[in-house]
Image (tube, rainbow, N blue to C red; front, top):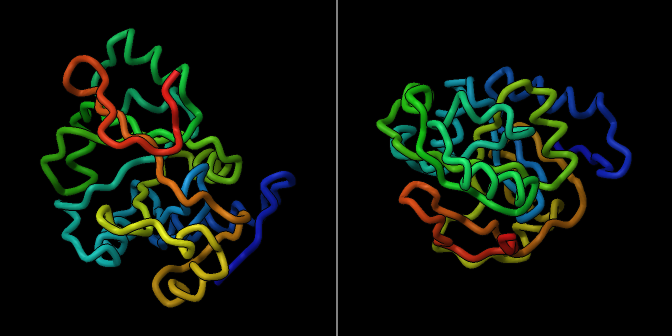
Length: 204
């Protein structure tokens, strides 16, 4: 199913429709401030397992990040942050970044893994933020492409995404044409923050 949501005039009924699908264990594709992403309810084991199956990995080995609506959610999922790291996040989020942080004890239980780190995203995209707010907890998320894939047109064009994934996921949100570059990944687990992949985001 493909639905269109205008990012400048968001229809909350459509947001609720997408959230209801995630709550029931469904997987959706939606726009972010970078490429389109695939996501599910972080607290739905069914959704997490299905997303891992789509990515052809075991859930315990899956490298999913989480999208939060704002920084107030972080304490449940990451260990206490240094003041300098919190300041870095506050200055750059919402924005096209994935910050790798030390995971709290809650995270391994959610992913059936021994995850010690978790990627945190707060995209500067109103549709994404409304989805996370309406869900009431983070969205587990992964990119449509594999890490070693070159990002091609179909990762940004919602109609091409629909043609490719209409039988793979439960819902695709058309929020306009996406970007052709991923987020900047910043590792904050080893002292000084280190950029491990330069994407769209330029750190402040």
